[in-house]
Length: 366
Image (cartoon, rainbow, N blue to C red):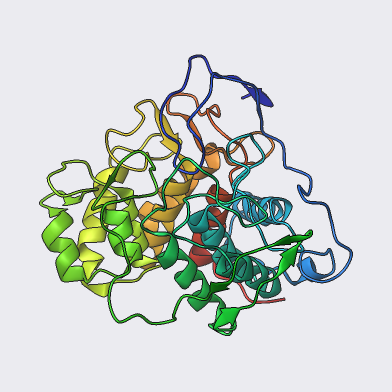
């Protein structure tokens, strides 16, 4: 059994999907976190409000029910109940708000029946200047060092659409713990054309270019995506590459594009044929020897939506094996023995676990 504190055996230098560049190995705490910003006694994120949690359907196995409940606890613990700022993790370098991560978290809270909590998160995101940075402090100011990603605006818009589109069109200046945030506006619920996505970083945050995930999140038409990214093996991260990218799954879930269904399935089946007992990497040739929990979960979600529950169940089983003894999901794990090699728990991973499990075992509101 993997120990509570996982210690890396070598200096990790790969770029993190959701966090900072790795520092020399330090003990990784894997327990469920306490409320990072403190608890509240009433309103969204309070114990009374969280009683509205939508359970999984009757077909869900016990391990899935446990992971689902713990995942909601992680998202609640990592969110400021007053402002809605959802950080990626508690570890230094991950204690920031990534728009894509927090948007997925809001969608997961909505799927779990926690709409007031989801709305609070999207309200925070609406106040961010998404062109300022890739990451934000919990007070809403940009974290220097990384330019804006090409998928942030699309993710925030998707979260708003999912929750029901009733968030006000614009937000006035608001105060969080005495800090005034800049005026922001809600992204439109429909768009006339693709958002700004070219020559920007994507979820990998290690290269800028015209990248698949940004194109999907920004509403690029299926025909153009096929022209740019489709190979005989499936969808790749960038034109001219040969490495399949699991982010194709987003076009079957958060950003549904019916014209890409066949290409998505081909891509995900290609990646899952090479999966480990603990899941898959985000894309081929990425951090050899490690697999990532968020892409494993989002691929299971997409395959469920595509009707391939057999392969989805295989990935969900691998996700389950990647859990720590405390039932938390690391950002990534060693592909041979499943020990955590990065931040644990990671909000993004738990968000996609909720979304995948609700899609696979849909439940009714209590």
